[in-house]
Image (cartoon, rainbow, N blue to C red; front, side, top):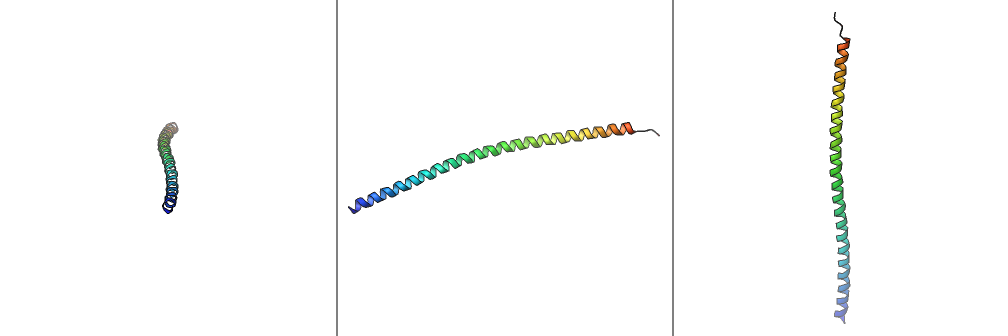
Length: 82
């Protein structure tokens, strides 16, 4: 009788522990998937940021070239021989 009661309590306890472990495993799985997704998003955003930096750098260079050309053109037109 005592052994049967002990075995029954033990089975219920083990069942509870197993259920909790399954819940924890499920949570870990979902968190792992979320982390992988976030890593992909970070990689994508890093690439997007690098592309935007490159475009900005190219735009700044082109703007500097245009300003330089404009300045040289203005100097040529303002040149007056003495």
